[in-house]
Image (cartoon, rainbow, N blue to C red; front, side, top):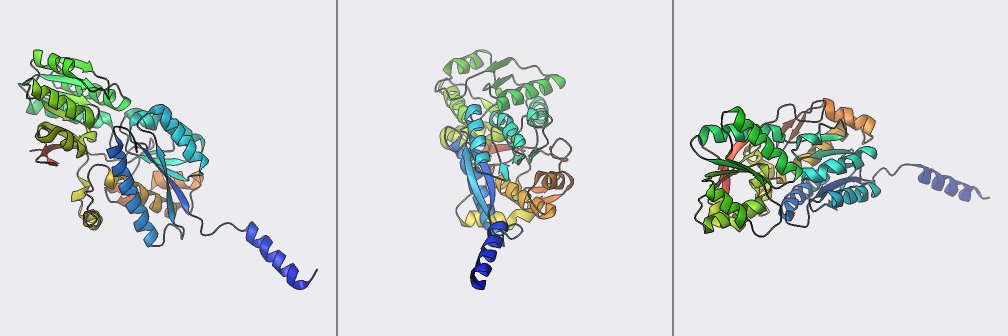
Length: 365
């Protein structure tokens, strides 16, 4: 064998044995990209794509670029499991998702078995109460926002009749139960505690029950699409219903569907990250691109920042390195500084009360 051929073969062997120094980091993004909650999925996608572009433009993470892989769960638990398995098969190394708690809970088991860590905005307490160590929740929990809603209703609607309604989902029922519990703790009992089925096109029977019970305020555990329909059908029978919901009411699709009736909606959400001075430049870039970073846009952006900072701190994505880096670290993001407790919940969660007015939401007075 010639010396030149020997050198070529040696170089080829060395190249095959060496790791791909410039391979992409594969980050999964899972949520409802189709179905009735696809507008929330669109928020998530916009935030994740902007963050990946910004991070990659600055050299990526440890010299490698981020590439996003999407998993559509349509907020359906069975589809969430299929989406999670598909993402695992694509060899993702981290995931932001899912959005609906009923999707996050079963999907998280899939990721845990594959040693994939996740950042989620799902708020049902069971997301982090099952003992899994791969979950890092980047917003508060339903027992926290439910307590705030119950207290607010009791103090601000003291003389009003209140019904508590849920959509039977893990998120909706969990939140509604916490609201009812908090109301009772503050001395106010709901005049009705009922459930509806999400996705139906007619809630006139429930609306009539609310009117017959003299309900003034509806505390709702569920999503914005059903609230819009409930408001319209209540208005049709002369019921001036005020609705108080949770974090899913941040979607401007509520205004599109309910029109001026959306001005009757209060809700809890974390302190508005758009007002965070440290996120001003990021917010400005979104608005320059004609994207209003409402709802979950900046949360998806923050999830990618979390990945970037944690991987940099850990020196890699192996679970043995990345999990302690996330659990022990402090991370500055577009939604503020994030620190996690032993369960994977935020150490300092916070919620505020908002109200829709004239097509936009701001802190309630």
